[in-house]
Image 1 (cartoon, rainbow, N blue to C red):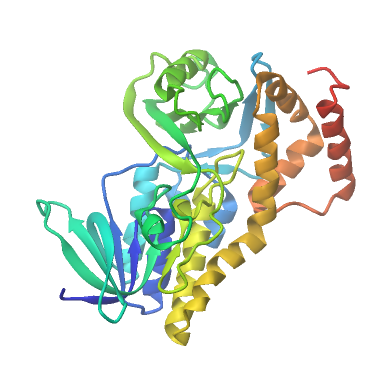
Image 2 (image 1 turned 60 degrees about the horizontal axis):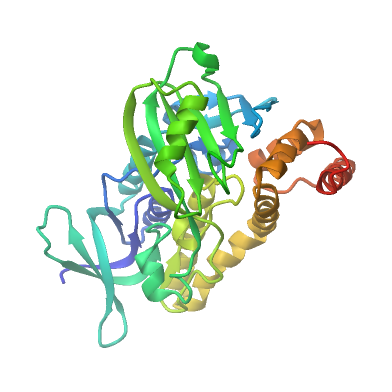
Length: 395
């Protein structure tokens, strides 16, 4: 063991790369351990707030979407315009690499390899063991003052160090990247995201067709292990008129369903991103929340270094849930009820025709908070939901 780092970040996705950049920019000696050559299946949507909060340049976007189309099991659809704004689209391979390069530019040491385990020295301090890429199975060790586990939904760091870290529920997400058709071909629009609420395409989540400029992401997610994600995606391609589009690559990965109850071990480890479970229920949005979680984890570690008080690590989760806990709870209830069967999905899409629902939904998405400025709109939505729940209005 030849090196010691103040902080070791395990994982180089949006959460890990953001954490490493924030730590290194403060002069904290930081190692970022990244597996490399792994692209997560993701629709790739990012709100303008992400661009602002994390100083993401416009040129990192591959497309800008100004409309969302929601399609019901009976093929009814609702087009929701994004008035006065847009949703940015990124390719995760290029976007994640740009974030990792920014962390390196900030001063982080980047190593490509696979996390193996955390060992403890006689004094209890941590040693991160990893297998470097191309090292033919040889192991390397680095001493770590603090560790940020940002290694995905089935995080090895979480399982070994954080109580309950191995119990995180998740869906399996799968997508296929295809060559985008010409504008208007089979109804394709390069500035419109399509979301399919159909039990045949996903029994408990949704299917998506998200344009990325020259390419398009077609995918779905489900928690059911006996449901074929590949077959469902093939059906989705047929429904969307993209069955003949050239397939560029296929990817699958677990996506967490809700935040873990604890993100740190009270000693020297804190989690971020998918490892902490910060993917929004119902929508599956995770990039913004991952980067924010990475930032909060970095700030918690920086505080712990200065104060030498490990209790600072718990502030990462406290801050995140204070800001977004209510949103996650509300979206979780929405998913548990409306995604249960096709009759409810049909009603859900119909509710989304309501202008109040559309405006408040996109206000919340753009600003990343529950909108409270229009109480009368909330009241109207509440009673409309009750009418659908009771079956007073037809689906």
